Structure formats: structure tokens, C-alpha cells
Image 1 (cartoon, rainbow, N blue to C red):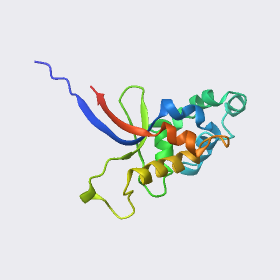
Image 2: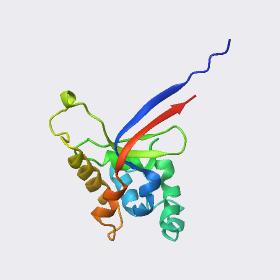
Image 3: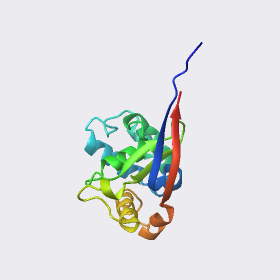
Image 4: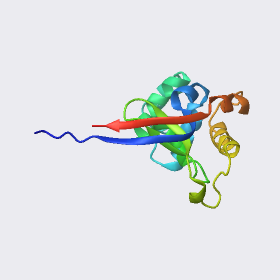
Length: 154
């Protein structure tokens, strides 16, 4: 009998899927954050940098992809969270999420969000650092919702 390993994980919390928020995100701000987090990330000395500069915003993310971890753009944004509350995950396929994970009241640590409103504001403020200037807080808040997904791999 052949046994195929199968792994799954829950993705639950309050946040956004990358597909919903990507058009609002400025790839250059993500690139600069990557450089801050990892000095070896895609920089001005790369041979493709000139091409990058003359590419549309969404296409720029393709240039950055190899420097991002398994959770892509969402992972970069989560790593920028100074309070270390946001997290990122992918579903093992093509969907990526940035979210504030569900926390039971008895498991709350000092500094954690204590209400849904506070968690929404935290995710909103984190995302606003990476959006275009014309994107408003209200536009970002509209994208934040409860996430209840399952990731899997085999």
C-alpha cells in the first residue's frame, strides 16, 4: 500500500487576501521593505532593475517574487509589523493572506488586540504603509474581513 503524506492547516482570522488588496499596494514600497528586511533583496544593482523601473506596478511584483518567502507580499508586510501581531499564510496553491489570527480570550498576551475593531485598525494601519498615497483608510477597511480557509499540500 502506498501512503501519500497529506498536510493541512487552518487559516483563520481577520484580514485580507492578497488578490483583494494587490491593486492598492505600491510595489516600490514593498521592494524598499524587502531591502530593509534583507539587504540582499532586489536592488538598483540588479541587471533587470532598469526593466523593473519601466514596468507597470502589478508586473513589478514578478521581479520581487524570488526575494520573498513562501507567503510572498503578505509575508513581507507581516514581517514589517512592529507589534508582531499580524501573520501571513498561503493555501498551498495560489492564494495568500495577511491576517490577525483568532485568539482565545484566556490566551491573550500583553499588547494583543482586545476587540474586532482594534484588530481591523491594526491590519488597516499596517497595510496603509504599503498602499499608494491616494488609497484611503476606508478603502482598506472595506477589504478586511473574516478569513476561514484551509491550506493543504500533498
